[in-house]
Amino acid sequence: MSKRIVSRISTPVLFAGLLWAAGCAPEEGAEESAEVDATPIEPSPIQDPALDLPNPNPTVMADWVDLPDGREWGSTAGVDIDPIDGHIWAYDRCGGVGLAGGCAENLVDPIFKFHRETGEILASFGAGLFVLPHGIHVDADGNVWVTDSQGTEDKGHQVIKFSPEGEVLLALGQPGVRGSEPGLLNEPCDVITAPNGDIFVSDGHSGQGGNPPEGSTGRIIKFSPEGEYIMEWGIIGDEPGEFRTPHGIAFDSQGRLFVADRGNHRIQIFDQDGNHLDTYHAFSRISGLFIDRDDNLYAIDSESNPNNHEGWVTGIRIGHVSEDRLTGFIPPHSLSADWPQGFAGEGVAVDWDGNVYAAEGPISLRAAGGGLTKYVRSGN
Image (cartoon, rainbow, N blue to C red; front, side, top):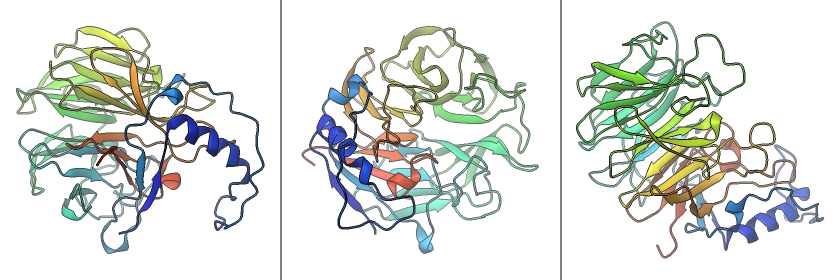
């Protein structure tokens, strides 16, 4: 297994050091040299308060796991923890990197279960069923749910539920049909199940820009455990209860639904009937959310940059569900003078030992060197 291990001392020291040396980074595609010209550059104008926070997971295991048969990782945005045995579920977009993905043509298994210590592949399945896997959730019974946010004539725009062995148990939406009517899905981003089995889908990936394409949506859809449509809430917008790409969702121990409203740079919190309870702004432009068993909140920002969220760095912000405040920060890959926000993944999960896993999206895949990065908890 190929691994790149980098030990980090603290977030501020890392950020300053990488910026200082960034001017000598090799050109794209160039081989790394043993000697570099460490010419200082101007300090970064970014003054994100997250940079002053402690990093509880300072050891980075980049390119943590290998795919079978010499496959190269494509991009991903989904990773989750099996609640039964604590192992890691994630997917690969069949070698594809862009929004089109690679799974429509490359009919290999996209879904994998990895041993949380060794990275050994414990299961794989899903070949031929997806266009662009996007969100992944493992329910209390160990069943694996995956959203497909793009479509072709005969597949996509669905949420598929698998048994732990890969048997298809349920599908929401109609294969290849994009729509906003009850029973249809429109670029579903993420999925999660409540303790009573109700299913929640965050739907609408194209709504975060200033001029969303015609037919775009931004909503949360609630289904019964059997997949029957119950209700929905949300439209594209920036008011409470409105969304610009609800990219990730998670439940806390009280059953409140946290929504990563990425295009609005915020987390919105709802009860399970769609009533708006609160809004958090400290966690930046969030692509993925994870809430652990102690209600610690992990939010990964993959998109902050001068064009859409100036002055904030990417990375994993850590807090608690009870307040809009940060307590820790795991910095991104490859901070540089040209890209001082760095590169971070889109999906995040935390195992029972506090180790953090990032699913590397199309922006961060090259900098990370592989689809999954493991950030080891201090003391582990």
